Every structure is written in structure tokens, then in C-alpha cells.
Image (tube, rainbow, N blue to C red; front, side):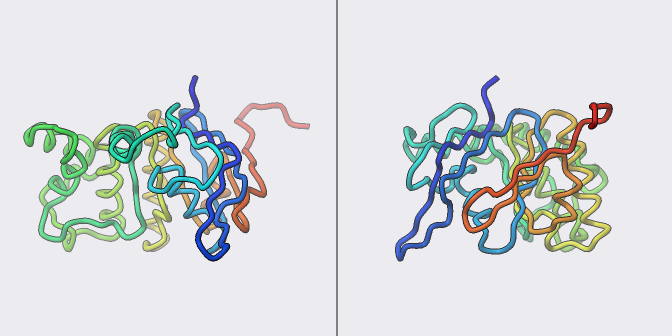
Length: 232
């Protein structure tokens, strides 16, 4: 099966000699749940932008769902993102005057889906993140954890193969953060590949795979043994 993410010697440099990524090699298969963890300045945010095709590498190869991003025009990259990738950000980015269904339906705005179907799929996505009782609530009527779950539903409404969650618990209290992570685990168990970018080692250690970044490089890539696996 084609990996969802495949980076080979991927580097990203900026003017002034800043090397945000240095020869990164990373493969993520369908159905994985992993954390990309590291402190500020470690390169994890740049890695997210490169994986999410929001930025192109300076050198090396990046493939998403089998597509080499270097060969795609900007319009085809946008289409790849719309079809295969869902994004969840720390600060929600919800429209203040629109209810939860409308905010989630906006995730299909550029996919050519009719309004009635957009809203029906938005309700289904909200139900998946346990918010079927909040369809008509606007952001100011929701808790921080509920806002983040609306953002997750918006990322899921297009049924992407991959969800990139950038510090999804960073703006939440501990209890709300735990609910958000539980929802992400449930979505992964249903088949969605999920990559969580975080500086929180506790969150990272709770996930089955941890990719640790430092100074633009991957310095560790570890997995928790599956239950029942043989141990030395």
C-alpha cells in the first residue's frame, strides 16, 4: 500500500542561511497515529507545512498519497489538499457569526458540493465528534474543547486520508484536551491517519508512535509495542 506520507532527504532553507529542515526522512503508512514532538524552533511546524503541501521543500522529495508535490502546479496542490488532507489548528479559526453546522460545512465550500449536502455531511461530522447536541450553537456559545471538536469535524467533513493536528490541545484546559485526544483516537480507530504536532511530551508518550525533532532533524522515531507483542 502506498504510504500516506513519504519524505526523502527533505530540506527547507530560508534566506539568511536559516535551515528549518535538514535531510528529513519519514514514512507514515495509512492508519497510523503519531506525534511529531519537539520544542519551539525544532522544525516540527515547518515539517507540518511541508507534509501539508502548504510549503515546498528546498530539496529532496515529498510525496503525499503517492503524489510527488514537486511535480504539481499550485492549483493541483490545492486540489490534493482539499481531497486528501484535513487541518486542525490550535486556535480553531471558526467564523464567529455562524453556527457549528455552517462552520463545518464551510470545509466543503470549494469542493463543488451542493449546500444541502454540505450541511448534511457537516451534521454527520459533528456527530462523529460527539457534538450532535450543538448543531445550532455559535462559537461564543461553545467551550474551548467544543470549539476544537468543531474544528476537527470541519477537517473531517471532506473525508481526508490524513489529518494534521497542530497543537490541538494547546489552548485548552487539561480536561478538554483529554476529550479532544480521545476523539482523535476514536477517529484513528475508524481508519483516519492522524499526525499530531505538539511540544507536549505527555501527549506524545500517550500515542503509539513518536517522531522527535531537534534543530530541523528527526533525532528519534519510536513506537509503542502492540499489545500481546513479544517482549525481551
